[in-house]
Image 1 (cartoon, one colour):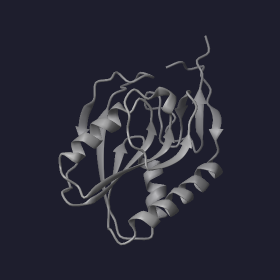
Image 2: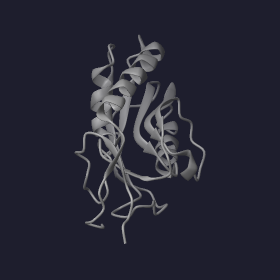
Image 3: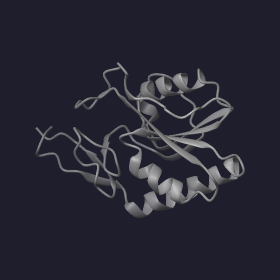
Image 4: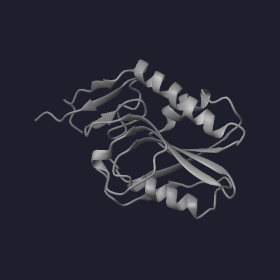
Length: 177
């Protein structure tokens, strides 16, 4: 990690908060009365998911999965490793997957394929940041917070080598020689 790299704000905490409220409204319309299983993809989604579920006014169950494809790099290795799988029964459930950022789509595709094999009633995806310029495989996205530029983003749960997750805004980092 380049210690001289300074984060520059892309989306402020106020913009994020308004977007979380908007997404919660859309999700509430679709899931009221269904008691969905909400699955967060760790580690990056934990802050977004916590803020989002507090805005949802209906019964739900929470679960987490953890996959890795980055390690300490800035680009996906393309090799997905399951660190923690789903432990809750999925069969016949309405499932809402929460992702912080969809970049290549490889990790999300892996998770969705794994969940489909468990035969849920439905699966939808909510992401805070969608970066379509980096997409390597198509993935369905039902709820999108922001369409993000092709920059390396940190903050609000997103990291670079486990750093910057605690920033309250979403920022980008550019390498400086």
